[in-house]
Image (tube, rainbow, N blue to C red; front, side):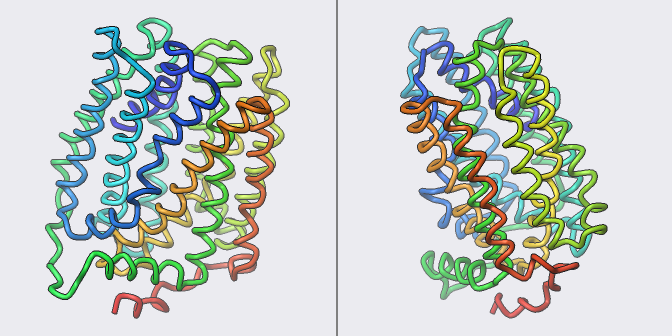
Length: 398
């Protein structure tokens, strides 16, 4: 439910800025930066806090908080009081709620599904997410065209409320973890940092994802500026790009286990990053206001098909590797680096788009995506048929 609504917001929130408030390329980049800023500012302590709280409480609060924030946008538009500042506040508040929700969700999953079944569980979650997002951008385009972008955000608010109701019914998610009398927030954060960066493969996976997110967000910040602003494409055509990404992601998630079995998990992740980067690079010249646009959409979707092997396999491995008491801190540490790179990329994309144009910013971001394979090639992953067993790092919990 919430992923379907989020797909609406993915398109509708920037269109509120671009179409309703006439935001510049830099202002649009700042909006995307605000959507990820919490991961950079409070990403590390969030993991320690989540490890101290009942996961169900965190998940429900995250959903209800996002619903309330999004409802403020159509309300302000109805009162003719909507400003860019409010959009920045809403985007940042959404990032705070998403940070806590995602850390709690990834920490709760191994409690529900353990061992090698984590790969299957993550594949199903990614497939579900992509199925939900297939229709979301198209629905967003239709809603924006018919009702305006601010009103379209009300659909996402409703989806988060329904999601909160459904998550509240999931059993079991675990209770509040037992308190450690000698634990301090700083000590727990340090423990999470030491676990992630002290493991060679975890470190490589984290840096690869960070480079990919940094450079990918440079392009993502300017994609709608190019499509809706420079090319003047309709909301429906803009939504087609995101729908293609979701379809590609769905296909890729379903193929992940076969690709990993054929190439070996380590080699499959390296190939995934390279092939996806090349496909996204090839798509850029075809983003034009003519039939070439269909080729760009196809290549963009195929890029996500290729990238899902890296995404699904890396998440499942780190969940399987990590001792349960460290799950929140491990997830938050990785999110701090990986998602913390995104506001930096969004700001960089806005600056590049403002001074050199949206298409140039997209080229720079796409070329940078290819560098994400470097940390993987410098690690044992480049030749590993299987990832090392989690037991080698079990002592990290002591």
